Amino acid sequence: MKLLRVGPAGAERPALLDAEGALRDLSGLVPDVDGALLADDAALDRVRAAAASGELPVLDAAGLRIGPPVARIGKVVCIGLNYHDHAAETGAEPPAEPVVFFKAADTVVGPDDTVLVPRGSTKTDWEVELAVVIGRTARYVESQEAALACVAGYAVAHDVSEREFQIERGGTWDKGKNCETFNPLGPWLVTADEVADPQALGLKLWVNGELKQDGTTAEQIFPVAEVVRYVSQFMTLYPGDVINTGTPAGVAMGQPEPKPYLRAGDVVELEIEGLGRQRQELKGA
Image (cartoon, rainbow, N blue to C red):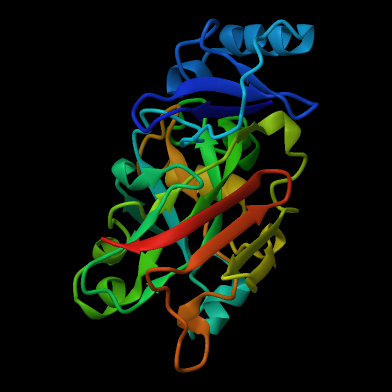
């Protein structure tokens, strides 16, 4: 299924994109798309049955904002330097273990919402990423097979980053990763049963119409199953938590001088095979 949330920010309603591309209203069936729904097999079965029957009301998509596909996200865990080609372009050695950092849940916005360039920023960068949404509590998971069983689905994430704040200002990466609007997510949560192999997905990103990133999750150093298993050794993952699994080569930081960092007025578009497409206009904060 393709689950999403539509409507004004803070007042989204749950919806479903059916096989014919029609937008269907789920608000009469479930209160929201959140961790509680993703952990409830019976509720998900009801949604599937209603979708198959064609009984769900059709929504007019014209002018309707798409919000983040998951409500009340507990935490956003991020994996850095997780593509062989991206590590190479930044001059970093491939890590021996996953590099883990966090984004606050309040950085998450809709897939087409405005992204704000922080005040004083000169190095705002783009990163298309596969997001993993957790559907079962994952705590000290023992195998990669068991880890995948904890995955509810997948989505497109844009891990926007401010490289000066991240790297040149001391401390951890958090200052360059947690600026307002720095994690567009969606348009949909595609349930795991519709993604045959999370290690065989193409990722692309354009800036002002120019293709910048063109990669595949096959290049991941630590695949999705290992990322979930590994992270669960250090923290408990709960239904509705999100893991951003890293970006392929092609970010501004890895390009020759003058590096083409983002500015107000730029337009970023990104997509992952089968998971949908995002478009953001950048404005000053």
